Structures are given as structure tokens and as C-alpha cells.
Length: 558
Image 1 (tube, rainbow, N blue to C red):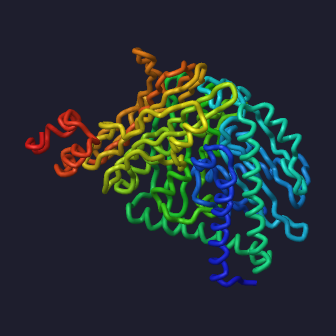
Image 2 (cartoon, rainbow, N blue to C red):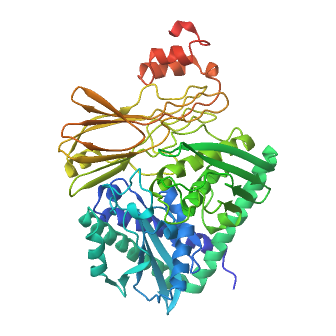
Image 3 (tube, rainbow, N blue to C red):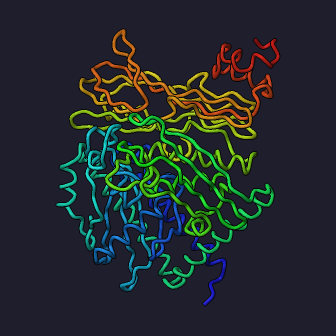
């Protein structure tokens, strides 16, 4: 039975809306500021075989890994002969299964119609603490996964609509923020329940057979769309061939870790191969395969067609190879907390750099290349946030100042919320003057965010990148300014590295300075009016102008 195209379109957008509504429910019922205010969660809808059908516009590193994580959970369920029934919800945070890191707790709910699974609903949320060495569970010196927190293999957190209170209590007893965890898990469960209700409404209107056939049509359309767009793009640029690039991560113990990419472009498919990248390390910069898939997917999509629909059809066109035992596909129990956060950003950078050789006027300069993770905690509390930065300049416009870039898509933590919930007082939150990379189009400015701690023995962890290697420019553009973090303790200034854990004293003030984006094009081609405007708005100083533009610009501005 053929399905009318209009019905397929209605169902496609209904599924996307269901995923979005799942996110609305999750946010409105969550307890922690990280999920409630920063929106560090994602929701998606899967076919019975685990194929991605629809997703909400949430977090790129979550969404891209859903494809890997969901199929891994379903495979694990089958291998362990776990029976699924209506009303069950599976929970797991094992990175080697769900595809990110321990803080990201993934819930999967089978949706039944007449004793048959017709869909899976899934969400993933970053819980502020999951145990481990430091408050926030993202340590910079963990040498194994088990130092990063509790590892939960797939297990029923809800069985026949009954929440497993004993299991929930056992997890809560082993983390620093039990009430946040409980409230956020219940929010995730409520989100899935809402999705199930909406999906059943679709089935009651169109029937489960029409729904299932629509899944195939939706995925098939995305495959055809991707091949068509890719073919036109490659023909326009005569870009069939191989393109390579290399970029590096800044390890505390091992120096620079290499990420090497080879992208093979054909008219109807893409191969992305990371052979030659550094082997896995005993440091939490390893990225599980799900993270590598997510970052690669994001980077490709932004250049090929940012508006293209995204589901399993895309993965019929793109093949991703990351050698086992490398930092981009480690084997357990390698630590992976920072791989999800920082390595994912570098994957985007290196894929963009390679694609800039194939599509030179479609790729921006490097954004800051870090999520700049800040974690704080005391005896019974933990706080986590990522801080925005400068995005890379684009081929036709400046970069954006002070935004979350690439693999993070969260908001900042509102200062009012942070000060209400935690013993901290903010003293600065502003754009970081002079941090942009110069060019015909300048990079975006980074951020300075500073806070005072109001009690003793607060553990601070900073996990960031781009302290040594600057965000690169393109087409003659200059590099962005690197990160720089320090503590003011009385009259002393204590500089701390990009990956540090420090015990703070009452009234210590922490300054976080995030990188700016790289510039695009020759700085001598920047028009004087843009330079004047940046000066007037105090985005750059006169010294910056003299250093980066003074040798070639109209001297009357100086």
C-alpha cells in the first residue's frame, strides 16, 4: 500500500514536534539548573530497529550519538535476553554503550501497539554529578573510566510503569547531588511518557502500519536529499577527491595528541577516516565512537547543507572510520569525560579544516575550539557549566561574539540562578576585548566570566582547550587569542592551566577567559568603518589595531 506524500509530510513534522515537546516537558520538570536553565539535554524518536527518525534541535553531541547509543542498547538488550514490556524504561550511562560520557544518562522507552514495538523514544541529559573523583564528575587526571563516576549498564529504571525506587536510591547514595538526580530522572521519564502519548495519538489517527511505512519514507527521503545536495555541491566545486587535515589536543601528560582526518568525497557518498590519530591515553581526552560520529556528522552537515533534514538516511551516505584503540574510538576502561566535551570540538575543527580545501568559500575559520567546562563543588553540592566564546569569522561576515559554538548548544547559567543555588558571587561577565582573530572579517570575541566563592574548601575543576594552540584563521586571517584562567587570592594572582583542579578558599576570585575565533581573509582588506566601530564599542583597543591592522590601513584612524 502506497502512502500519500502529504501524509508522510504530516507525520514527519508531527514526529519532530513530538521530540520538541518531549524537550519542553523535560525542561519544565527538571530540578537542576544544568538541565532546567542551561538546557543540557536532547530528545529523539527511533524506528523499531533503532534507526533515527526524528530529533529536536537540542545538543549536537547528544543527537549525533543517539544513532550509536540507541542501537547499542537494543543490541545489549537482545544479547542479554532482557524482556521488554509496555511501560518499561531502560536507563544507562555507560559511555561505551550510550556513546558520550558518564554524566549523560540515557533513557530509552519502547512504545508498544498490540504487543509489538512500533517505536523507541529516547532522551539524554547531562546530570551535574555522577560520583567519581571530583564534584561534577569530570576530572582532568582520571586514568580509567571507574575514576569518573558510577557506570550503569542498561537496566530497567521503570518496569510496567512502576519506578524502581530501590535502584534509584542506590544510585542516589553514590553521588553528591541525589535530589537533583532524582528530580532530573523523573523529568526524563515524564518526557518519554509525553512522547508515548503523542505517538499513540498519531497511531490512532493513521494506524501503526502507516506510521511504520512513513518511517521508511522519511529516512529514504533524507538519503536521496543528501546524495542530491552532495552531488550538486561536488560538481559545482569539482571537489571529487581526498582531503586531509591535522589538528591537536593539549594533553596534560602526553603533550600534543594528534587528530588526523582523511575525507574522500564522491558524488553520492562520503568517507571520513581518522586513521593516523593518536592511540588512546590514560587521560580523559578519549572520545568514544558515538562522540566521533556526532562531531563528524555535525561538521559535515554545517558545510554541505545546514538546513538538511537529519535522520538515519544521512548515515547511508556517510561512512565514518575511527580505528579501535585510538583516542577517537577507545576501548574500555579508558577515561572519556573530556572526549565528549573537548575532543568533540577538535573533531569539528579538523573536519572543517579539511573541507576548507574542497569548498573554500563555505567554511568558516576556527571557532574557539573548547566548551570551557567549569565545575565547582563542596561537601553536598556541585555546579557545572560551559562558557561561551568567539565563533570563527565567516567568508562573508564577522564571527559572533560570546556564544556557545559547534558541539555545545546550551545556554549560559543565569547569574541569578547560580547565586541563589550555590555559594558563589559573580563579579564580571563581559566580552573579552582584543581576543578576536584579525582578518577582512574578524573572529568573534571570547568571554571573561569571574566569580567569588563564599566558603572554604570549594573544589574547582577547569577542563578546557586552546591554551597553547590558537584557533586558526583562514584565507590569510589571523588566529584567535587563546584561553587564560587565573585565581585572585588577596594580592596574589595564581595562573591555572586549561586542565586543572584546585581547592579554593573563601573570597577567592576565579577568572575564566575563553578564546576568540579565528579571522577570515587578509586583515588589510578590512574596511576602516568596521575597525572604527569595534573601537568605539570597545571590542578592540588601539594597541590591537596598531598591531594587527596598522601596517596597511588608513593611518588617520590611529
